[in-house]
Amino acid sequence: MKKKVNLPNFSIEKKLLAKNFKKIAGVDEVGRGTLAGPVIACAAILPSAVPTIKKEFVNDSKKLSAKKRMESFEWLRNWCIDYAIGSSSAEEIDVYGIVYSVKQAMIRAVNNLSIKPDHLIIDALKLEKLNIAQTSIPKADEKSESVASASILAKVSRDNLMIKLHEEYSDYDFISNKGYGTKNHLLALKKIGPCKIHRKTFAKVND
Image (cartoon, rainbow, N blue to C red):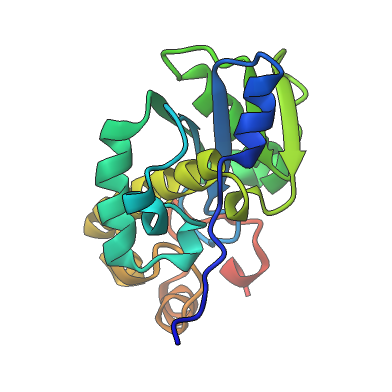
């Protein structure tokens, strides 16, 4: 018997639509815990609930295989009413800290949207600098289809960036680890030290 998977749904969005909010953006980030590269955020506005045939393609990005994430990414790019990416660099993270930098990446993603949203659903955080109504929910990428979609778009965008950065910094195997602290990545750090895109304030980078 196939185990039932609890997927995100559109119930949070429906409650907000019932309150007359019309342009609801889900916001999420990836790369918070990596040792190298930027933190990437995405804001995504969906046209409706995800069609039944695509339900299993929209989930917390960490729960999807790389192949399914890419398929979902390609579909979401065309299906979303609007989506935008924002980032904070490793240098910013070292200067301002990870929480501030995550918020800045999210703010940039929202500001990069072509359509201005009137409500945001955000994974755990509150963006005080934005004058937009917000709903902050822990693990929102597991509950809201809008946030799960943003999670996938952010994850694949960041993975693609790290693959490109691998060409410049091939010693660290970013093509495989995407900046996370894998065994090979940590061995490279011990052997040759950090590169320009490493987060110098993170403990494992300078161990």
